[in-house]
Length: 140
Image 1: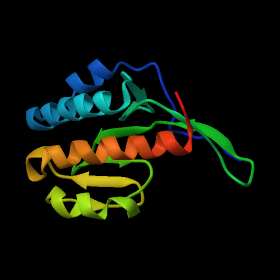
Image 2: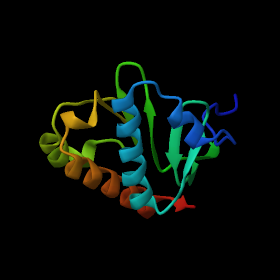
Image 3: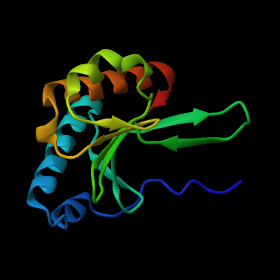
Image 4: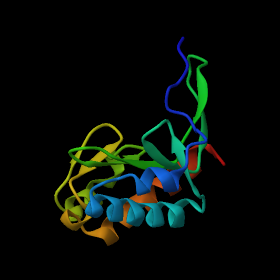
């Protein structure tokens, strides 16, 4: 079984954010960092080379595979900001309906820019996802 590629690194979050050329995207990332730090109580940390993550949790699958992953995080991609909502979206339908322009994957929330969504709803979504993870997993 291969090793998980997305794991904490010693790369500088500040340097990563400062290197984002698009001024709007850089500002959006700093806003996301504030929301996630408030939700988790943890400082930002790079996960791999392009994901800013907050906090961590330990998981163990029935197969015996186990590991540690971030509680929440984001990545400024070319087309979208990807916000990682680790428990997925099944229990957050009400919030998603109020959020604004977005799309989702299994645990990925895709938004073009923060101005496209209600930031209070996004902050609540992040808070609720972190609370959900803390109930289910051993959180650091």
